[in-house]
Image (cartoon, rainbow, N blue to C red; front, side):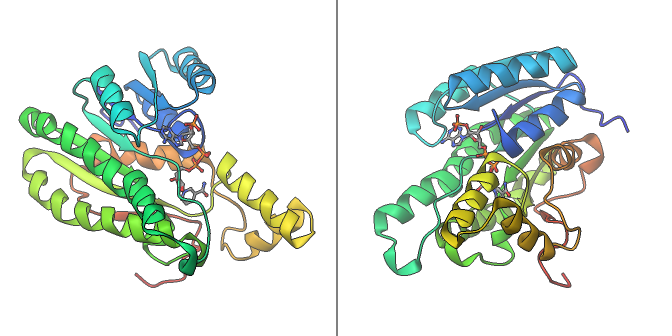
Length: 259
Ligand code: NAP
């Protein structure tokens, strides 16, 4: 399917690896020029080169912490106005509700609520003026069903979801759509680290930890960054212009809910 977005420009934050990279690759496959960001320069440059080689699109990189005000300003300056914005950042650490301090909550809000909001506030006016724009926020399945150890994520992402619910309905008349894409378990460095930690704690093997988790997912496997990325690219396509303010689960059926 031709997504109808060849020649457009996208900013994908936190995109040298994992789900952000998956989104960047799928947009490049659709002919979209990219601005990519991550903190580590080496992986970011390698990803950018791999995407240029594979898809022949223009890729600009800016190594910076997207959660810091200075980092974000540098990324926005490098990007200029874009047609497509995919927001992403690292998730907060796991823990126990009684241990989290005000500072822990502020850090989670900065990363997973206030950063994507700031990015949208920077890009939406230009998109509205042009009469076309697409925003996809990478959030989490924890928006639909809380993950007990990830209370910081549950809280911060709920705030972002509320902002998107209201704002998406205000900008849609200008040809701009905002949606959230909610990953369930996907095979990335993050889940690998979590599984290894679980294997250590439980004194079992990585394979056993994974096998137990696969049993809880109807498709019996983790998702891939490539399929997640292509779902994101579809939400950024011409064809998705009537999808507004939605929270799309990509979780292999893991959340057991009717709606
Ligand atoms: P990942 O494989 O660890 O990749 C994270 C990417 O983001 C890397 O490129 C990393 O590069 C970059 N990054 C992290 N913090 C950054 C920052 N402050 N500024 C700029 N770049 C940053 O993670 P992932 O699995 O793709 O997860 C992406 C998001 O989806 C996270 O918020 C995660 O909580 C959420 N999520 C993931 C899953 C899953 O199963 N994978 C499930 C639910 C939700 P640098 O480290 O070099 O900056």
